[in-house]
Length: 345
Image 1 (cartoon, rainbow, N blue to C red):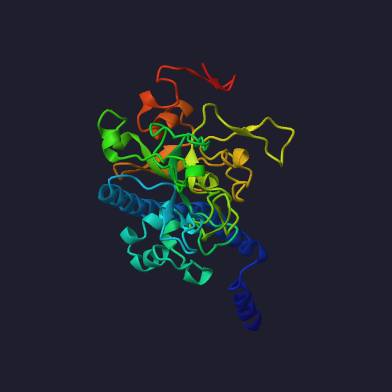
Image 2: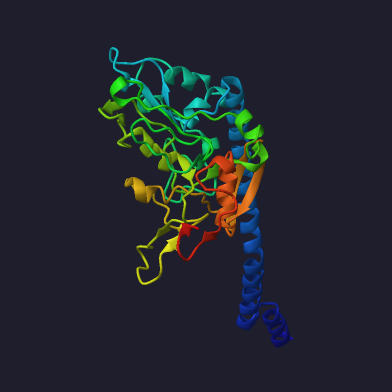
């Protein structure tokens, strides 16, 4: 009897093989469930990103309607802080111009005053950051979203950027006689009356390489600022996205044995560092990019949010950025784009 009871007790436990089978089954189930969980998490992040962009789009249109024009990608804010020198007028990105309409009148009051903006005055705003970003860590003035700057600005003396090429231009340019450069202003009416229409024009996009939304007071001659961004037109590559006459390419520094990569939507998005300081190279990074996969979220000028696939034809991408395609630098909608020769024919 004693032997039978011992045998019965032993049969109640698991054998090593049974445990391994159970572990294998659990592992398989986890392998099947984990991608679904990750997909659900990313979907939630994408929805949060779209909601952020929707808020930015609404605030932007509110500003455009109230002021009868869109702000610049960089603007002049507040009175001079050093006598009559206009070099001391604050250089502010498009984000600063939206502060009032984003419920941050306290921050706008600081920017629009004669007082300097210090680091202590800056506040983190989570609705400026896509939750799928910041793999290298968050910054105080992190920015995930950029505005449609059209074709890169000319920025030569007395030059005026073509408003048909895009929406946001340099509004910080000097008004002094020795450096007077006219600004380009774009309105909703311009797009609707003969232009491409607000529903066909991209206003805001994502860009992994976007830089800070805040700029300190200019400190140096030549419209330079305390954060080292250089001349005001340099900000275009940090807070905007642009189009080029030909598809820009960059040699991947990790794979110099491969052909250059086309910097279309999501081009080299895994190079997550900020856009290079060199303006010509940095402007190649000024394109839509994100970590959602397959494309990027954009806000049109009618405040609608869309997902644009990264496989979009570059001609279509350009046409979605121009405000008045027939008058833009594209040289006409009937021109064929040749990827091999990298030029307009």
